[in-house]
Each structure stands twice: as C-alpha cells, then as structure tokens.
Image 1 (tube, one colour):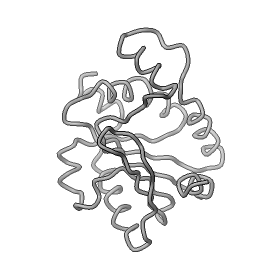
Image 2: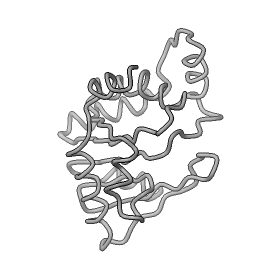
Image 3: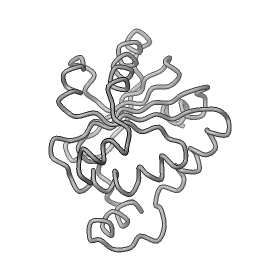
Length: 174
C-alpha cells in the first residue's frame, strides 16, 4: 500500500483535493473508452469510476467528507468538458463537494510551490501528486509536516473564493 492509499484508509474527517492540470492521461483505462464516447456524443451506458462513487458513499456513511477544488483551465479541453459534464455530476450526487476557481485567480493566490495537484487529509497530511509532461500520473510524495499548513491555507483560500457547480456551468456556458 502506498502513502496515498494509506491516507485514504486512515483519514478521520475530511480529504481534500486540488486539481490543477488542464487534463489527465486516462489512456489504457476504462475511463478512456467512456471519454471517447462522450466527445463523439455517443450514449454512455455505465460509469467507469464506479469504485470512486462507492468509496464516496462509504465515506459519507461514516461522516467523512471529500472536497475538491478544480482549477478551470484557460482553454477548456475536451477532457475538462468530459470531467465537468459527465463525471462531476455523479461525484456530487454521491456526496463529493466540488468547487471551481478560475486559473488566473488560482495563480494569484498560490505560493510558487503550491502549483501542483495534491490531496490533503484532516489538515494534518498533504500528498503531492506528480505528473509528467504527458499528464500521466507518476507517483506521489508526502510533504513534511512543516509544509502542511501552507497547502491547507491555499486550499481554504481557494475554497472561500470558488464557485459551485451550477454557477460554474452558467459562467462557462456548458
């Protein structure tokens, strides 16, 4: 079990994610086939991330919350549209609190070293998610305790100045 899996197994109250990249590589996954159908306007019969929805339901029953801030890319990619219009409504239905911030605002409030995707847990643990230039997930790295407050504060600032899903949908005209 890696450090991220362990954090999901052991968090008590809240896990929170900052998603920064304009897209994420989903090649060689079930989600890729779903994505291809979405961008072609075809009917999607099932949800590729059902395991995530089941986890959201499980955590919700235990009184745990999952929060996400999604930085809106300057140019809306097909991947972002897929995520926004197909995936996020299901995540929200299952209890994930997803909020959105504009890219320029994100850059204006972030310290230079808080420009990566990360997961935070109970304001006690932050795990950076490392991606390569092809937007493929490579690994994760647990931050030292001394850096947790900075990342948590950035997340909270972004959260206070974020939009709900419906407001973002209106803004983006999606």
